[in-house]
Image 1 (tube, helix red, strand yellow):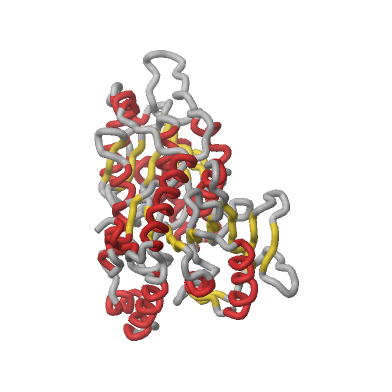
Image 2 (cartoon, rainbow, N blue to C red):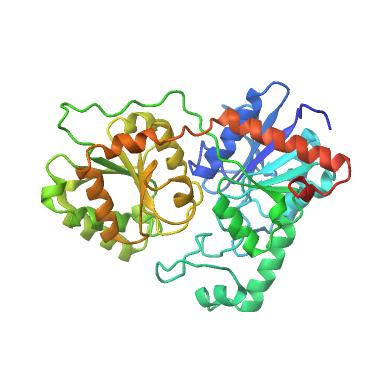
Length: 435
């Protein structure tokens, strides 16, 4: 394989032009970063589905405004097995892309919608190709949207097993969950190496049975030009009293915990200047009971809370101008939410649940504050501390380390690709890289 790796194919379950999830943005940033490096060349293949209208007779489509990007239309998807039922189109159209491009590396940033069969298709069509998979959550392990939260409530799931999964989904037998585990793990094992943005996620997959020597932690890179300066304070007596939540409003994101906490903070501490600003959408897609719960909590919080609706990531620098603190109250483990990197890039300390990738990325008392997950009472204490300790914001801001750029992220990936290719060329198992 040539030293400069002229051909990399980055595969994603979505294109940022249609879906602005963190995984899609991370995948596209890697693609852009690789193309910034002299001698490297990246192409981007993204899955699309309904309501995007496919071309007749082929799953392949183009995105004209992004010349080199390829769209792959796939709708026949088995969510339980993470499988694409339309193997005929994989054999015809997906393999056509592989044979035309002949990539030296295929890097999957996800396989939702595409199906795990695409990994096997790469290995069969291009036996010497380096295959890398980045994990963004626990979908391979957990059928409950990859959240590892028990169904019917908010209890965190500590491990995966056919019996435990059956307790969440009684209609699915332990035997079927065992078959799912063998199917998913077997196809993942076809890859050469795994990337994770957090050590926490690595540990979960290792507990599940994947080889720890085939993992590396590389944080996702940011594509932001300049940091936003701190919010101007009219006088020296004014406080850093603007809190913000960025993200989807779902049952797992803990917005209900946050709203409850805001309503509980005493008037003497909250004052007239404090504000919670919520940037996010999709509440209308949540269960009716959750929507009603949020409505009641908003009514209790009154004018302490303002909703600004959904936003685009390109708006973040402007939105950051009006806030001081970012809060991540998620009740699931999370992995490496992009809002952490964005907030740190702009110098905003964070308040987060004390679990998973959040607790790993945000250090309590150094660049942010932790509160006990799902505890609105503990969050009241942390927000009160932020409002009553005049020097805390500056102290935590000083402890923030600048996140890596998308170009640095791409360079770290390119180094990994080189190492993997060298090992394959020598006939050494890729697991020996870190052995």
